Length: 216
Image 1 (cartoon, rainbow, N blue to C red):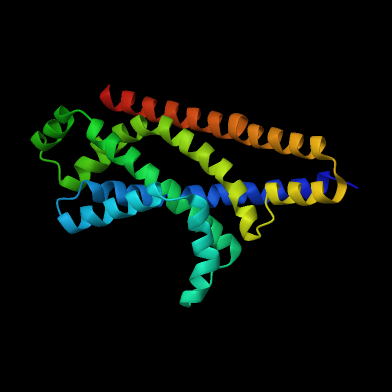
Image 2 (image 1 turned 90 degrees about the vertical axis):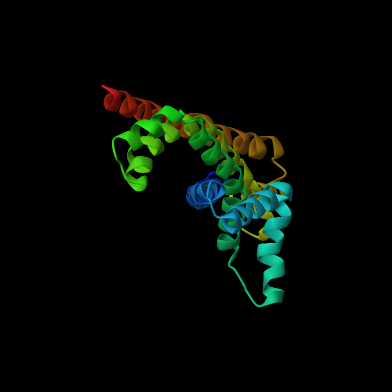
């Protein structure tokens, strides 16, 4: 039995899941991270509730809720939508703390200098604070994206034919366990170590270079 074609298809679905879940995670992290710093107490409480709930409970159970439980409450999601939302919301909760801590790590002198230049709050944040915070948080986000990649293996339990699902199915049919799971292990490693890590290092260099150019 040919193993290559189904595993390539499964790997492609894993890549799509990783990219889409990462986009959801970044969006949720930015919104929740900024909300954690809001002067409005209800906004801060909502952000804290989101972060604590998704960090404090199992991602697998969250996926089960989105796919198996929500239909009983009148809201049905496709497997791929449930997988993307479940992984993205969970990773976004961790990312929110990265965003918040990176913004707080920007030296207060930067805020004071921007205020002295009479910049508006939006301009101050967009041109002075955000670029520095981005450079600070990128290394941590690299780890988060790798965790998102690895977390996609859980979606096989909600019927998505990702790499892990395909590998498990092929193993049940062929019993070529060493070849199948050895290949899966290598594919996950290549996607994480040879694609995500170099990509994040490139972004880190660009962010750092941008700050240096602004300083000069």
